[in-house]
Length: 384
Image 1 (cartoon, one colour):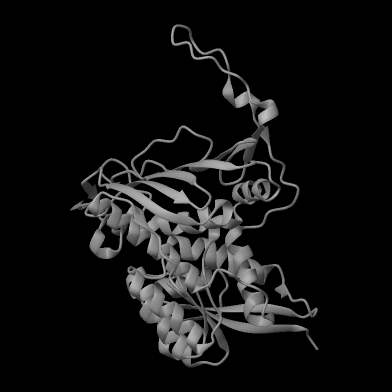
Image 2 (tube, helix red, strand yellow):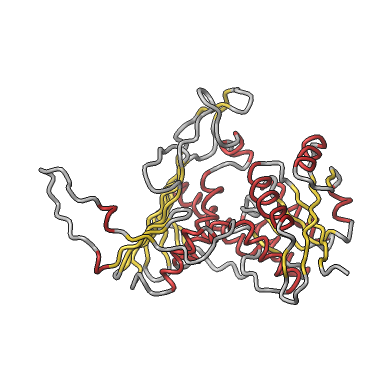
């Protein structure tokens, strides 16, 4: 008799780039292809996804291409089947709270991309509803399992920085308008009515990154911009960009730490990676990208002299030491899927619930409010 148990996972909205690549192919199917997930009692669980979407041809082709046996356009039927115990959503943020509630009412455990909703009230309501109904629930927090940020947190936990003073973050790259070259991101990202916007997209990430890698966020001051007002959609048609394509945010963190993160789809990259975070402390500093992390202890800090009359002779990159991997890092999305499966199946701890998702929405909402009112906005305890 096999010790492998199959469990059904409803995967909704995975025909899009992120849902397909990171969640379906590199997470759930990767777990399947490695032979399942071994639990602490020695048994194995084999994820058996059912792809759900509105476009029958698209989901059938996706299923055929990746050897997925089950697919349907009938979400109600998938939710009614007791074999399916988990519902995952990576589709429209606008519809997400309604879909999650529907899945919770069907008795499913729910796992969701972020943001969990467009507004804080809905985010708090669905987090409380999941808790009230007693279903396991989770929100994607992928950046915490990036190797670079794992190393950065490792340095913090080992006291490398001394007293942390500040954080500097740079995120983004040049997204083509679609006029001369195809855009790398979908056009809805730049339409406010469709849920687009840099603040709504990225401040939910910065909330869990700052809270967990540095210190909890206490307040925010944010400036937004729509630098490029006209773009071209997937059919080459011109449209007006009504959502912010850049956000410049300063955060006060617990412990009098100041953090500033620039997020932009209108910048050209001249740094180590598409996103970098630098933490400066009394004893040392470190800079992390997606995979690599470099540190500089106070004993190894050079002493530059300001002299605008001569070209700079120091190469400031030479005085940093790479933090070693010391382990094999798996795909961050897959790691979190495995964590959530363990949470559902063996009640393993899982901190990143829908309540944490609501905190991300809270920070985005506060960022927009700060930008509108041109002032600092405090981050209150949500009480969930």
